[in-house]
Amino acid sequence: MLRSESYLKISCVHRQLEIYYATASASKLLVSFVTEYASYAAVLVLYDHISTLDREIELIWRRRFSSIIMLFHLN
Image (cartoon, rainbow, N blue to C red; front, side, top):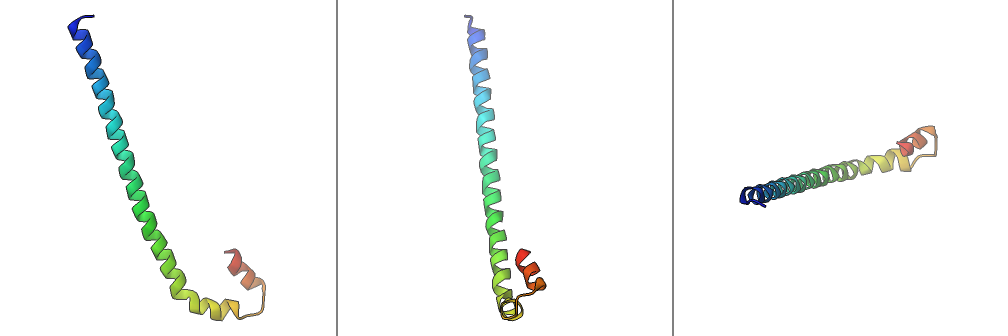
């Protein structure tokens, strides 16, 4: 094997490793991004449930079962 051929193989492997690490880094960044915004969404949903719970108890839970209440629970 000539010296230039071995250098070419080493540089090709090096380039593949660079691509692999860049891809791994991008996927870690995407996972971090999704996880962060999913936690923000969960906090907003929890806030919405807590802030409207008193009205839900008054308007839904204390009433007789009807089709409107069934639609509320199906939603």
